Image (cartoon, rainbow, N blue to C red; front, side, top):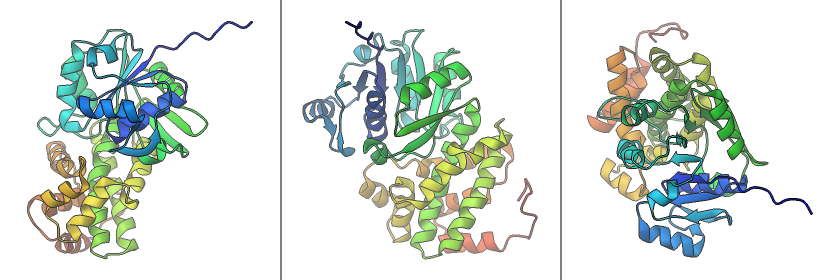
Length: 342
């Protein structure tokens, strides 16, 4: 008789929104035990009974290896890796909660996207400030809608880490017949792409909601990509990162599909809703709204020209009509397309 396979050390997924739930399901499909934790104990108990997250990811049944765990310390105890999946505004506080419980040998990854509003720091910089230097840290990013991952549809994403071996291990842990993870060493580029694309997706929703057409949408995507790349390179990223899944891929996804909360937010604003009303209707965090302020502030700090982001910020926070912003963008002085100042 063949010896039984040694059980793998579990993965702790910290955060049970739509994307945290989808990642928990995918880790389990790939053969790992998973402990899924949330601050909402009542919601977590309901997930345990129903074996799905009916609120955030209806229809995606939990595989047997997914265990809901209401105690954070227990979720982390003995875990080989922990993956934090919370909005950017909650990331620092979540790191603080995890810091006192995390074993030094446990790998730490996150799927949080966006600059920290108060400091302009990227998530890996926030993690370093809270936890100090750790050997195994990574970010998960790329063009991924939680509902499609939950449904088992073919998906690809990027895992970026300073340590290539750790990135490869996480990629192997997530990959299956319907899910392929690629690795990158450019954590700055991957995180910058994840932050900027949310702002541009709001702009795409505004433009489409106002009936500006396909030409405007593709112009916003391509010139927005140029702005994303300029900012990333100024921060130390590699320009080629932005032509991959975590740059162009994620940007196109969120700008063109109504599964994107950021795009839907822009559509609602174009229809006359106030930001507060639009956020209430969507019912989940819309990262692009605060990200418009954060990205604009970082761009100003770095001296990087981002006229599209600036225009979206003016519409969201200064009440400037989107049509006026588009007119201003279209009448800017003519320049060469390939120009870091354009």
